[in-house]
Length: 306
Image (tube, rainbow, N blue to C red):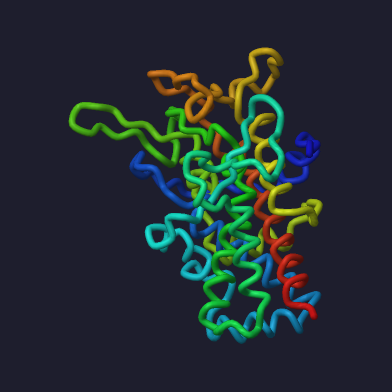
């Protein structure tokens, strides 16, 4: 699905505020959108349910106890527990080159058939949450997986193959290059999208959640988790990766398609992106995070309504 990004950026321009910058190591963070972003997605979901479907919210509240969907420990739990669940992938690797494969084709790790792509994992845990005969602790675990994975699938590079492991250099970027035993280590474009764009904005989970919930962005909802991954792949192809056959005015904000299963090695030197890259990309991040929160609310209503 293609989006009119020019109008989206105009829509969000007034909502992007300057914030204190946090410069951290180039060590790559693991969580798409950061724990803050995932919790903000949960805030949107909770606000939507409390507004439109109190019955479903009360069912979720009974599982959560004193917690909320916007608690970072709830929204980030699936990342915290990744080592315990090695067969659950947090992405769907749909090639940006060539045709989109059928949903039945392996898209994460073809050499590891036991690994569930994020779309398949959402379906698996949805069945557990839906079944009220399951133990509350089991259903709560399923809810935490669903909350997190829906957010992951809306990060463009969590739907794309390659996943964006190009090293990049952004002057004054949130993730700074580090010298490790005489070798400079740079952040990847995947790390920038997982971490820097949200951190650059400088808001707390609740602050970001309130911004997402109250802004005027109105993304489409519906479709399936696989469709969401295809959307992410398309957004990555259109806005994040260079296409030499179709150059655009936005190419300064794009990186080479390389690594992964492409058969093309990434450049040996970091690819330079504009100093304002993280701020420029915030509009797209906001769009996808809000969309994830609204879609999660819709999914939960469908699962928990008799």
